[in-house]
Image 1 (cartoon, helix red, strand yellow):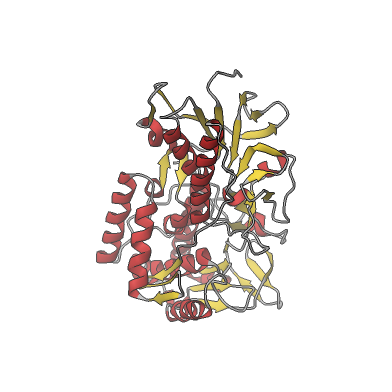
Image 2 (cartoon, rainbow, N blue to C red):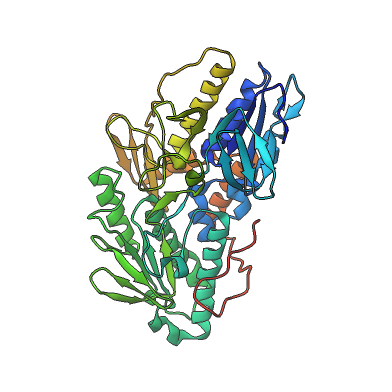
Amino acid sequence: MHRTAAPHVVVIGGGFAGLTAARGLADAAEDRPLRVTLVDRRNHHTFQPLLYQVATSGLQPQDVGHPLRPIFGLRRLSRRGTAVDVRLGEVTGVDRDRRVVHLDDGDELAYDHLVVAAGARTSDFGLPGVAEHGFGLKSLNEALALRDHVLRRFEHAANHPQSIAEGELTFVVAGGGPTGVELAGALAELVDDVLSRDHPHLDLRRVRIVLLEAADRLLGAFHERSSAHALRALRRRGVEVRLNTALERAEADHVVLGDGTRIPTKTLVWVAGVRAEGLAEHLGAETTRGGRVVVTPTLRLPDDPAVHVIGDVAGAPDGDGGLLPQLAPVAIQQGRYVAARIAADLDGAPDDTPFRYVDKGTMATIGRHDAVAELPFGIRFGGFPAWVSWLGLHLLFLVGFRNRIAVFLSWMWNYLTYDRAARLILQAPRSTGPRDAPAPAP
C-alpha cells in the first residue's frame, strides 16, 4: 500500500453504477491529477437485464458480459499516461479511519475518495430450501447453470418419459417482477419454438411453467393496465400465473405454496427479492432492513463525506419518504452524479446539490412481438411497438460495440429462424440434487 501526490479514488464494483462512475472519473482525470482504481471480484461487467436470455439459450454469455480492462484500455489519463487500474479481487473490509480498503489477498488500497457500488445479491428471505434447491439469476454463472439444468431436464425426460409426471418438465418461477415475467415468457418460447423440434417424441403439452406472485398482480411497479396486459400475454403462451400465491418452502423434487399446494418440480427459479451485498456491513454504517446503506441526499455516508455509496447497495432517499428502486437507470445516473461531485471536490468547489433521479420510463418484454412500456407524462403502450422499443433500448445500453453487434445478430437469427443457437450443455450433472453446479466463469 502506498499513497501518491495525486488523489486516489477507489471504486468498488464493476456493475452499472461503478462502471459509470469510473468512466466519469476517467474523463475528469484528463483535466486534473487523479488516480482511479476499479475493484471487482469478477473481471467482467455483466449486463444483468439480459441474463434471462442466456438462461433460456437466446444469447451466449460473452454477449452480455464485457471484460473490464478493455473498457478502460483506450481511456488513457492524458497527463499521467496511466489507464484506470482494474484490480481483480474481493473487498473484505474497509477501514474508514485509515482510509484503506482490505482485499482478500491481504493487500490494502489507500483512498482519498471511496465509491461503494457493490451491487446486490439474491435474497431468499430465509425460506426453507430456496438457497439449496433454487436458482438465482444475478450472474453469468447462475444463468449458465440454469441453462444447463433446463436443457438437461428435457434430455432426461426424453430418456425417461415417466419422469414428466414427477415434475421433470415443470418449471416454477417465483417472483412476478420484470425478471420473472421475462423469464417465464422466454421459457415458453424456448419450449414452443425450439425444444418442440429438438424432442419431437416428447409430449410437450405436459410441460408446465408456473409463475408465482405473492401480490395481486404482476409487475407491481407498473400501472395496472400494463400488469393486466402482461398477465393476458403470459397466459396466452401457456404460462400458469398464480397471483396472491407465495412460496412456503422448496424441496429437491417439489415446492410447497402458502396455501399448502404441493407442486412436483425439479426446477425452481427464485427472482422474488434481492439484498444489498454483504460489503455494506463492513462499512460500519447504518443499513435498512434490506441491507442497503443509509446515505445522505448527496449519496455520501452521513458521518464520512469521503465515502459515496451508489447503485443497488445504496438506500438513497426518493424524496417521498421511500427509497429509490434498485434499477440500472438509477445506478447509471448515480454513477454520473458521484463522478461529477468528486471532481468538484478535487477542484475545491464542492457541490452539495442533492441527487435527483429522472425517471425516463420502464419496460418489460413478455416475448416475441410483445412488451409493455411506460414513459413519463403517463404515456403507456404495449404489444409490438413496446417490444421494438425494448429491443432498441437494451442494445443502446449494452457495453461495447462488439456486444451490441453480437446481440443484434443473435436476435435477428432467433427472430427469422425461431431457433436458439446457444443450446450447449457444458457441465456434468449432479447426483445430489436438481441443481447443477455453477458453471466456470466465461
